[in-house]
Image (cartoon, rainbow, N blue to C red; front, side, top):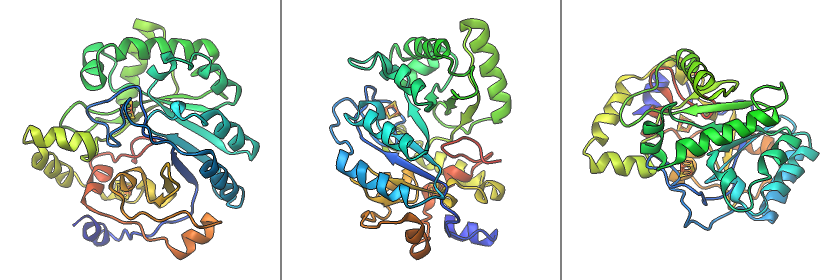
Length: 312
Ligand code: SF4
Ligand code: SF4
C-alpha cells in the first residue's frame, strides 16, 4: 500500500545520490528500552569485526560521494573496535556522527570516551526522549534521565554543544501512541528547560516517529494498540515528507557487512544484500531500488521522520 500511495504522488522507489552511510556496528547495549527497534540489550553479543570495518573503509575510500558516516547500534561505543573505526574513518576525512544513548559513558572502561570523541570531532546525537525524569525513565529505564543529564553536562564541559566543531544534537521520540509535534517548537522548549534547570546547551533537536517494529511493535500488540497506531500513521501520510525520505540518499550496513536501504529495513532483513561489492557508487547504479513496505508509513506521517529528525 505504501509504495502505491507514494507512486500516486509521483514519488518513485529509486535511490538518488549516495551521501550517507549508516553503520550498525553491534547489538550490545547497556540499556534495554521498551521502544528499541533493533532489540538491543546488555545480553546481546553480536558486533562488527575489525575485518568488516577494514572492508568498509576500503569501499568508502573508493566512493567519494559519501562524506558522512553515522554509527549506530546497540551502543556503538561498546564495540571492541569502536575507537579503531573512528580513527580509520578520520584518516580518510569522513565526517562522523555517533548515535549515543549517553548513559554508556558511565559503563566500565568508557570514562575517557567523551574526550576521545572530542579529540576526533565526532558529532554526538544523544537520545533524550523528554526533559522530564518520569517520562525518560518510563521509556528507557530507572535512573536513565539523571545519568543522561550528567553525560550532557560532561559533554558541555568539553565544549560539546558550545564550540562550532563539537556538535551535540538530541533526539526526541514520543511516549506511546502519537506523533511528534513541530520540531522547532519542541526544540525551543527543550532548550529553555535544559538551560534553566540544568545549565545544559545543545545544538539541535531531532524529532523521530516510533517505528512499529521490534520491541515497540510487541508492546503495542500486547496492549492491543498495534492496529490503531498503524492506522494513525497511514491517516497522517504526508507526500511532502515522502519526497524527502532518508533512504533516497543513504545506505545502511549491518554488523556482518550486509547492505540495506535503511536501519529499519535492516532490522526486517528487507532484503539482505551481502557486501561483496567494492564500490558503493556502482552498487547504486546496478541496484537503486528501495524496498518500500507498510512500516515506511512511520517515515511519512505528519512532519516526517528520519535519523536526523523531521523531513519538512
Ligand atoms: S533504544 Fe538505543 S539505548 Fe535503548 S536499547 Fe535500543 S540501542 Fe540501546
Ligand atoms: S522505513 Fe526505510 S525504506 Fe521505508 S521510507 Fe523509511 S527510510 Fe525509506
